[in-house]
Image (cartoon, rainbow, N blue to C red; front, top):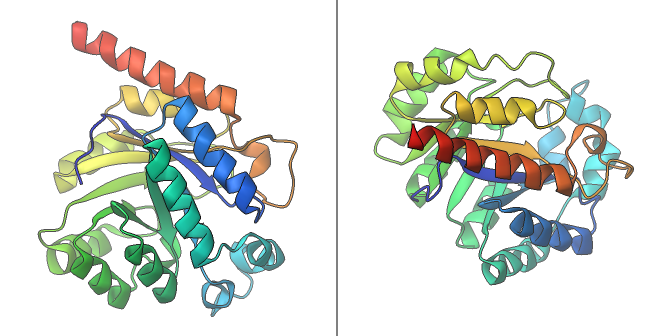
Length: 253
């Protein structure tokens, strides 16, 4: 997969569709209208995701997770809408069945979710697929990352995404972007969990080659716990515009 834009901007729909296929399809259209390169959803089977995770944030939101779980047929329709609108379809995968289903759709890349960061059996499947891998480094030690890059991924194309796993995040630690680039000599991006658009724009200024940002149709919606801190369509469009304009200005200097 070639990142045609730098920064490559992923509009993260996550579970903000509230389990409604219609809303999810609308979010594809919004992401395209706002200028995103890709729109991303979450692919999981609730039972598999919650296994051995009692007491976790995931378990506490188990009813919401079940309500927002999308089917393979839903993903087929979302992928078809993305193809029609000429925006790339991406999904974070959380379990083996979901991984295989998403690969079967003919996706350009996979997003590796934090809870499966060291699931080496799943990583072997991802490696065999040959797909580009967006890899959140937040739940991995540097030793973990080294093992995954040097022993499992080998020649597969991938990018590390710096992320702070707080919802919303209070300290973005954007200095990690330059550090990760230097340490692992690879493409590095930023998955933003802060409120507003300022930090995401700053991350692009500081060299992030991928920007991932949660968005919602409206912060007044409920069900998903992410609505209230996600950005709305107008803000998504403004963020993307600022990132692109500021990059163009930097290149002119």
